[in-house]
Amino acid sequence: MGKGKSDRITYKPYEQDQQYLIPPSVQELIPEDHLVRLVNEVIDEMKIEAILRKRQKGGGASRYHPVMMTKLLVYGYMTKVCSSRMLAKAVRENVMFMWLSGNQKPDFRTLNEFRGKLLKGVIEEIFVTAVKMLSAKGYIKLENYFVDGTKIESASGRYTYVWKKTAEKNNKNIDEKLRFYIRMAEEIWNDENNDYGDADLEELGGKESFTSSDVKGLAGILREKLKELETTDGCEEDKKKLKKGLKTIEKDYLPRKKKYEKTIRTCDKRNSYSRTDPDATFMRMKDDLMGKGHLKPAYNVQIGTENGFVTGYDIFQNPGDTKTLKPHLKRQKRRLGVNPKVVITDAGYGSEENYVYLERQGITAAVKYNTYHKDKSKKCQEDVFRTDNWEYNKKEKYYICPDGRKLTLCVTQNSKTESGYPITIEVYECVSCKHCRLQKQCKKTSGNKRINRNDRMLRLRSKACRTLEDEQISELRKQRSVEVETVFGQIKGNLGYRRHILRGIPKVSTEWGLLVLGYNLKQIYRINRDNTA
Image (tube, rainbow, N blue to C red):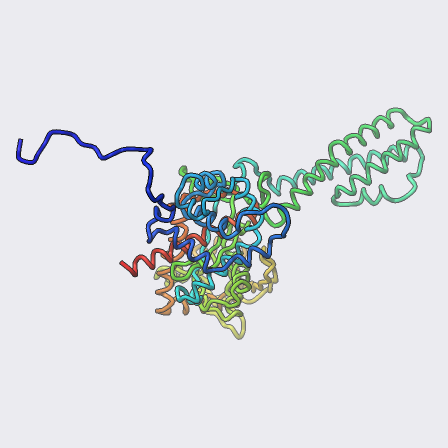
């Protein structure tokens, strides 16, 4: 064996009961550049205690400090500790959480109640305070606003669906059955040569549909009539029929009517909702591995970003992105008091209503419409049967088809979208397509060729094309996927947040407030780390 070497095995001292001469503090166990220190520092700097105190009333036992509770929840959502039980456990076992809490140990009920009741009302204000702080420090300028949405599954059961169309169909079926009982009652009363006193029954029979109040009124009329018949020597068979009808109406039709009315009222403009989370709508999700796009109860989360920071978020019940942009931007202006200079989105937001709103607000719309790339293709531009390529006389209002025939204005249609936005469509029809040699290539329907023209939308699309071709806007469009998709990738992929923990829009909004607030703090940490590297 070489000099200085030994085959003797040695171990470092291992004594679990060893006493410290000077006991270490929890703070000494946390590295100076750790993320938790930034969370603590920034939330203290935001001075949110005044915001939280506005929602609290005095009296009763002493309570945990709301700033400390907020720090715990924000850091918990940043580190995949979202459940109140997991958070309560982390406060007892994890040195980072122990330091944030000052060695206090709130239980899971206290944490859950704080998140579900107090934060529910103030998380938006706290988030806006953080965004304004970012703006003041130069991290963002509140000029370019990159918008996108994603669907996140609700905490409700996946098979708790309630469909509006089914409720409406069953409601109509009950109306038909009620008319049958009304006719039967009228026939019985006519046979008995007895007046029913007023026109209530006649009025009910003439209705196209019945409400639960109508059904309750019908039951009352039948009950009163039965009392009258009991005192007479009428037909026992008729009495039995009325008794059976009354029982069916009271025990079956009336409860079902109330149930269907509640369903239709809860759905409102939606097509469905979940029984265990009525605010959630069934949406087709992209995470189905079989590619069938199964429907799940979910929320449509819309966020806006700038320079990698989330500067706005909202929760919506409708699955499509088109109808979310206008209300989202309105709320964002109310929060920050200012509109962005440029809004950058994908083609899912390119509707006439959105273009008009952005134009009226003086916002540059870097928003593609659904056929933008198709319209730019060489094949599309050279297609002689594409109506957009046909000659159009704006003054005299007519088109010229490839065969040289005129299509003149025949009718102007005014309608509204699902959101209630008015649109005007001009319909042009060919004078005659008879004996046209290009008829097979030009149209697929019988009758003369027709074209729908929306002048306002055509103008807005032309304006959008010019905007999107601008060099600066083109650079922003390239940046959009990096800006917004990174946030969704971090939250859904790295944090594994693909299903909400809480139910209902107010509580789901609280969760997202904590998520995006934590994301922004992480972004500050990354920037500071890169600058000091």
